[in-house]
Image: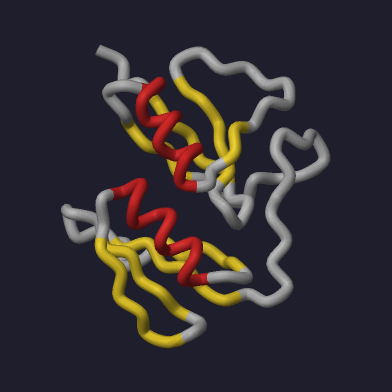
Amino acid sequence: MVTRIRNIVLDTRKPLELAEFWAAVLGGTISVNDDTWVVVTDPAGRRLVCQLAPDHEPPAFPDPKGSQQVHLDLDVDDIDEVERQVLALGATRVTAPHVETDFRVFRDPAGHPFCLIVPAV
């Protein structure tokens, strides 16, 4: 069976706010279906959806007893510049002890972890 990903869906208490963050990070556009489902489409047509989950609790990271559940890895050319930009948009840097070599870990405004990665040459 061959399938294609239609959406990656993130739970959040504030779908529009989270979609605005991801649209800015990905250079995407927003389409609002309703108060519970906001779609971000990146320039390549990939879709990230922010879905209302009133009881959403962000995963802990790093947490040896817990799981990230899911996270996004984003390739960047200039990690210092993109870090500055995502922080200005409302991301937070994960500074708890973990090993970083060619990547940095952040949380989006709803607490979902994501990594900025410098691709290997």
